[in-house]
Structures are given as structure tokens and as C-alpha cells.
Length: 158
Image 1 (cartoon, one colour):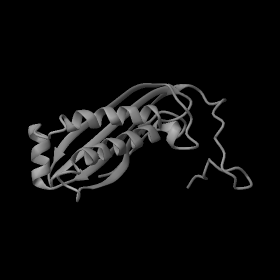
Image 2: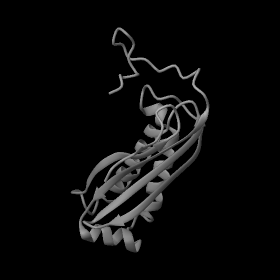
Image 3: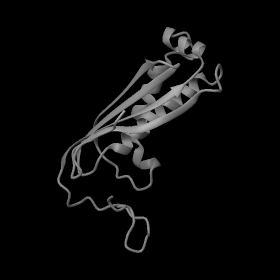
């Protein structure tokens, strides 16, 4: 197992120096799931929520979150994202699965941006639907894919 990179030799938190790393294309995808009552899912699917397009708003929230990751996660570098895509799919078990993919041409990866985008999109679904279903559960947040950089490619197993 590799060592933690965000600590110096004395155990103090540091921002990793990426100045000497080569610029490369880096891609990361993450997912989050939100489970809800069947009636809530149907309302979203049919576009019948009084607040409007639940998944459209969630997609925008995810994109905005990715762009502000370094403002929320202390040791993340601010990066110039070249693309952020947030998608939502309906799954069995009354679930909306949110998938976020972020791309950058840079010196550091975009895993945190993808993870934050998926998480915030799922939380936005919760926020928009809590008036009809306070028992929703957000979870299963995970990195599903990353490529580029020194550590190469990662794919999550099912």
C-alpha cells in the first residue's frame, strides 16, 4: 500500500507540490445512489414535482460542486476542469443512481471533483424531495473509474 501524500515527515497536513508533475489528460467517474419511496421515484420520473425538474437541478448542482471542490476540501488543488458531466438513471429498488465524470488536462487528478459532484447531485435530489419523503437515503458514494497520471487506470469492481 502507498503512503499518505498529504502529510509531511512530522505528520502535519500539507498540500502536495504538483509543480514538477507532467500535464496529462485525467478522467475520473464516481457514483452516488439515493433510495426513496416508490411514490417519490414515480413523481420524479413523471416530472410531477411542484419544484420542477428534480434531476435537471441535481445535474446543475453536481456541475457547480465539481467546479468548487477546492473550496470545500482543504487540500485539493484548484484545477481548470475541461468537462463535467452528471447523469441520473433510475434503478431497481426505488433508486436514482447519479454518475459524474470529470476531465482535466493538468498535473493532478479529478477524483475528488467527480466524488463531490455525484454526492452533491444526490443531496440535491434529497433537498428537492424531502417535503414528500424525509426517509430517503443517500449512499454508495464511490469512485468507479480513473485514468491518467502516474498511478494509471483504476476501475471499481461491481
